[in-house]
Length: 266
Image (cartoon, rainbow, N blue to C red; front, side):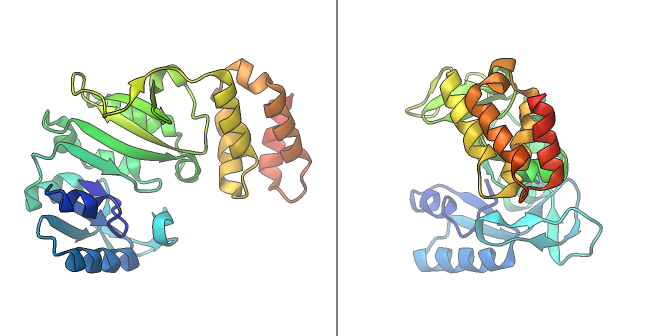
């Protein structure tokens, strides 16, 4: 199951390998390209669906473009169909899927809420998802909430740092603006080439500093908010404090973010 399939970057290669793929894409422009890609590749094992995954059926508005298309979180009327993953997998015969990719730019909690039967099935062994801190912050939750929601369905959740899988429960905060994660059933086995390990202080600091200095203000705002949950040694690190000082003193940065950076500095 590929929820947030975009133009088929993941779904099409999997279908070419002979796997059945339910490719779900909400942005109309992306969906058209997904159809064209599937047709050009002569794929009959790929099932494309134009919909936004949600906790309940309805119509939603979309914003953004390309890989950053997202659901508008307000009461504005929309033209994009919203469907639950439970309904989609039942209708299209994917209740036996073993792997799901979830890349929905801030709609993860909604998607999980509409997938209780799917996530409760022992057949689904892995969920690979993107935790985009900026989009999570935009809709009012931390990336840790995604891990918690999947944990409630019996999955062990890991944050990926290169080829190292770090148990999310041990990290406590997301030390990078945007990262990939894997949720696995106990005993399902690790992805090939990966190992469970730890991430050192320097690596975490590097990610934090990069997010605090990102050109995209949303990532800076997210990391200032996320640092509240970081271990004291991370917040006290000289490189992190210098990055916070630059944010606090930059008049081009939103006042709320500057004030929050100042509070972290004490």
